[in-house]
Length: 356
Image (cartoon, rainbow, N blue to C red):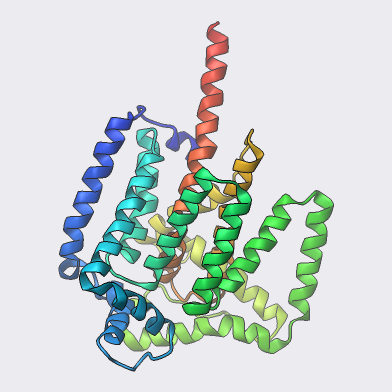
């Protein structure tokens, strides 16, 4: 169904795509100037903490907010605004350029909207992740897998050391995912077995350390805002054993990817569709005649898997999960573009042969 929607509608020329991208960028820039007057307060929650550090507060001294505040402080107010708008403009232009048909444009705009809403109307930690994602996508389009992988390691380790330490775990899971996807059936079974044994062998305090942050985050949301906890959820069981860990993790997978099963509403339906598109973009198989190009794309795919796997450990609600995951949504958009572009090319080739 996704393929049919993506390839649906008339084909769009480069001129139309450029005009469309320019219009969306201008509209975004105008909205950015007035963002504080129409966006809900929770969008600015992290940004306000960063701004308080820039203003000289010591409330979040030596935290990730402090580290990011130092970066934005070095840019100044005008420089920070220019940085955020530039990142957004490049992202919008990139996503629109992947839309060869109206169906593809609609899907890419559906993927783009939550990323812009959560991450690109304010200067936040995730704004930097979007910036990193764009650098990796541009690298993947020009160079091979080893350069993309090396740059990914450099960026993710640097971000982990200065901002969010769990990005090291994202990187580690991405490496594991790459090894699994590149292995033979026997290799996949061996990796799955070793991973299972490794999880079971962890001490009970490790399960608590991995999953308890979700419970603390929900408590924080409830204390701060009842609205902020509307889709928040606790772990089903106290995460103090391997069995409880597995149950809690599977529960989080369902809550975050199939929210329509737990809450009936247009937002939950839209969220379920969004997650379905992202999952399809990552796990659909691509037959690529240029191995090195395919390998570069595979690096980005495995990074998304890492983001998903780690975020499901501690994300307390649908909004925060969407915010973090869509910061790398351009990886999925690139993969959809390559996947369905090849499908379209093969279909056109088949029709050409039939006509002959």
